[in-house]
Image (cartoon, rainbow, N blue to C red; front, side, top):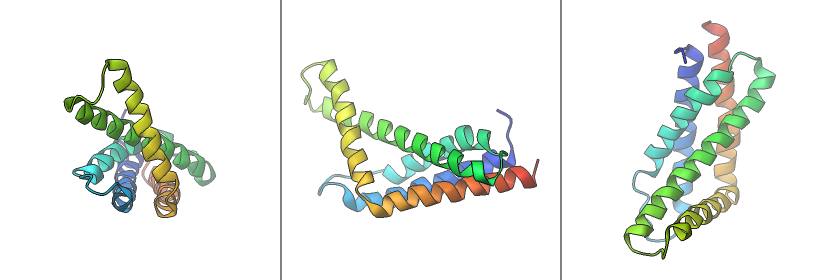
Amino acid sequence: MMPTAARLFAALAYAVVAYVASEQFKPLLPEGLDAGWLSEVNAGVGLLCGWFVMGRLAGDGYGRAVTHGLRSTAVMAFYVLLVHSVLEMFRLSMRMRYDDPLEAVVGVFEEAMEYGRMIVGSPEVMTTLLLGGTLAAWLAEFAARRWK
């Protein structure tokens, strides 16, 4: 896990993509739901996915960078959904909304599916994720070629 320019550029680029997509996602949230640190948390997840996923894959060429970028975006989306679903489960658990632990675990997946449907149903968010992820991958590829 050696620091490289590709990892740095990928981390920063995916953090920006996650932040922008999160800002576009906020108006889709149900009325009265506090978004809180949504964009910042997602930017942190994007930073980690850029560093560990895309940064590791950079250097295979610009054509492969597209597929690596889409893969990294999918990984980022999965972890963003997981993080926020678990946080929502803890919030609901503190309000005694679940009868047992199994119901809470099922609740995590139900929340993830609901948020996932909201993301896929938004053309703006999907465009940001797909195009932003591809551009971020090309930026990482450029950095990998430029600074070996």
